[in-house]
Length: 546
Image (cartoon, rainbow, N blue to C red; front, side, top):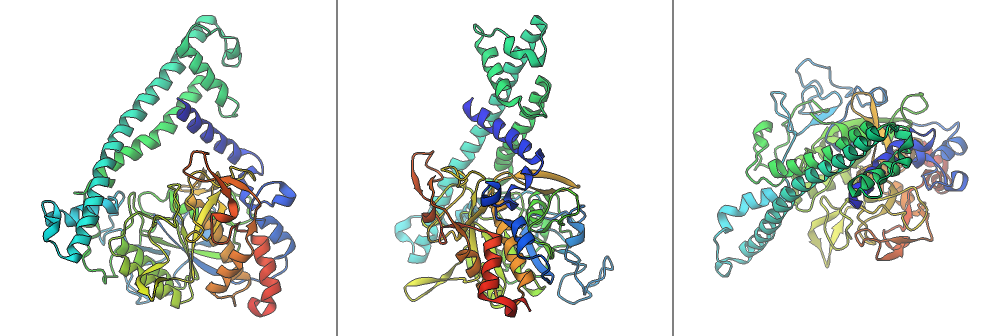
């Protein structure tokens, strides 16, 4: 019951935060003036950027789709200048027909789109099963043994994951019904005692355990202005449980189903990693909530009195769809990166990741390609509360091909952890991955209010939300200082980040372990727009602004 209360209270808090005047933009605030550890964006625009000229910057959002018609995004979407809408012709001859706002690599030429997909662990089991299911490891070659070990590890993980997912579906359904029983019990007692919702504290539940627990739940969450009756709470409970039940059900049907094959929809030759020209121009797809939220954080139209303000004020969002409800595929990721680099993106936001990589060499080639073109790639560190120094989270800046005694890293790549709005031991988000070697810096990633499909707005959390904060800051730098290279922008972001003398709970340790915040990332800091602009002015000045 405690976990349910925590979940409901967090949702209520997020809704309340998003609805309070000024609070929904906490990530834009400044700690010194507002007592909120945001990125000092408002201060930067008011004091450092006022009167300065900027140029448009293209930011590619490689994600699950973007609602390009959203009221707060439609004016800042990238429009392919060489393409004429809807004529069925590849006008600019880049290999993609009618790619007006970007491209969808997980759609078919017939207009159908991939929604669900399995995870890479399931694909690996499927790919190696015929070779190693009944194999004797002692009789295998060195290369085969390596594949065999990967297969065995993946098989065990897949089996355990399917079992856990099935148990979770049952558990969440049972917990939801238990909460309903408690609320119904309170409702019946209220009717019997002829009291209103506001008088619930006068209800005697001293001898009724079920009702007592129901009253406790009501007392904890009824402070939100949205809650005016038990029926409102029941609606909240229904919404709160709908997502996890659907999530774990999808895991069984798709994520951990090794026999599910989404490529029938795409129609490509999946085994051909060099194949690039497939998909369709539908960059919104069946579920654009994640990518639309990311896009709004980066560049939703500022100061228009609608919804919320993005971080960057002169950006064009290029939508590149490669992420399904499941794990993205390496071939699609590589093609997404290449498409963005070839079509003018200066920054790529990648709010996705996975635990296995089937075709890392293909992704590595694309990353090298983008790096040579001067693109800054910004990637989410992950939400599994793990140390990325110890556990690989793909895609990664480490190239598979070794250089001398170490793997060469992409120099224009950043991995981002998530922090909260409390400047204390809870500063690092409890779900965020971290790493003194493999996570570059942190950014706001809790209760982030941004655009969602069909002209709506919502608060999300995750390193997926922290990554576009950094992408937005990087875009401002590139826009006002176009002479800066990707590597220079990364250097500024790292060096100008706010270092905090904080002891924080280490994610994944259930508050049993604390560490210096400075030890959880390479930079040891939180991204800050004001500091970054100030450093760009002082270090590079007018030369970079031309």
